[in-house]
Image 1 (tube, rainbow, N blue to C red):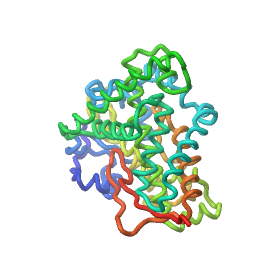
Image 2 (cartoon, rainbow, N blue to C red):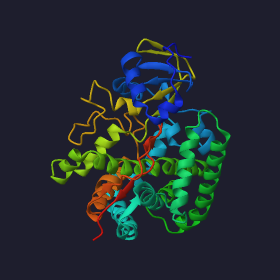
Image 3 (cartoon, rainbow, N blue to C red):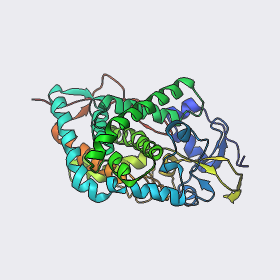
Image 4 (cartoon, helix red, strand yellow):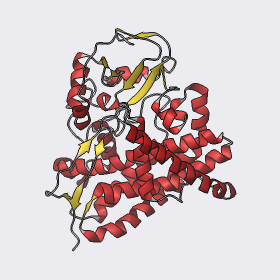
Length: 390
C-alpha cells in the first residue's frame, strides 16, 4: 500500500457531488489514499498528465480488475505493443476520415429520425427521449450490431459501466453486468457471419477482418459499448442542460461568439463524463513524496484535473469562451480515447446544433428538478424540457 496520507470520503455524498471533496484533496492532499475505495487518488492535473504516460509504473494491465473479469481483456487494459496492436486494428472504424466520410451522415440521419418523432410533442425528458436513443442508434451503426434494440444498447452499456465501477461488490450489480455481456455476445454471434460476407466500416467488421482473436474481438466491442453509449448520451444531455441553465453562455452561442465545439469541450472539462481511470502499480516507485508499491490501485481523477485551479480560472464555472486546451477529458497518454473524433462529431457537429435548430424555444420545465449523479462516470440523469410547436 502506498504511504500517501489517508483521507476518508463519504461515498454517497461523493456520488451526489464529488467536487467539494476533490477541491479539498487538490489543496491539502493531492495524492491521497481513500480507504472507502481502497485506492490512492491523484487529483491534480499535472500529476495525472505525467503519471498517465508512465505505463511502466502506472499500468493499465489489471489481471484481477473488474473490467477484465466482467468484460474480458480489451485494449484499455493493455499497455505497450499489445495495446497499440489493438488500437491500430480499430482505427479504420474511428479515424477522422471515416468519421467524416461515413459516420457523420449516418449520425445526422439518426438525429433527424429521432426528432421527427419527438418535435411535435412539445415536451420530453431529453435524456430518455433523445440523448439515449440517438447515442444508441449511432453506436449500433459504429459497432455493427444492427440487430440490437436501442433500449438494450443503453441498458447493457449502463450495466457494464455500473459493473466495472462496482468497487463495493454489490452482487445485483454484478449479475446485471453478466446478463449484459451475455446479451452482447449473442448479438455478436448473430452479426458476425453477416459482416464476414458483407464487410463494412463497423467495428465488428474491421476487427473480424483484422484476424484478431475472437475473445479480443468480443472484449473490444464491449469496451466500445460501455463508453460509446453513456459518454455521448451524458455529454449531449449535460451540454443542453448547461446551456439552458446558463443563459449568458447560451447567448454567446446564439450570437456567434462561441461555437458548438467550444460548448462540447467546455462541458467535458466542467463535468467530465469519465471522472476517473484506474491503474495498477507495476513496480515500486516514488512520486510526489509518496512511495507506491506493486499492485497498489491508483485512480487518476480526470474530473478533478479538469477543475484544477492551477490551469483554469474559476474552474467551477461553466464558460464556453474559456481556453480548454489543458483539459484532459479524453485522457493524456497512450490511452487517449480512440473514439474522441466520433464523439465530437456526434455531439458537437450533429446533436447539439440539430436539437436547438429543430426545437425552437427549448427551455427547462419547472415542474421537475434535474438530477445529476456519479463520480467515476458522471452525468445528468433526467432533463425535463419543453419547446414551442406552433
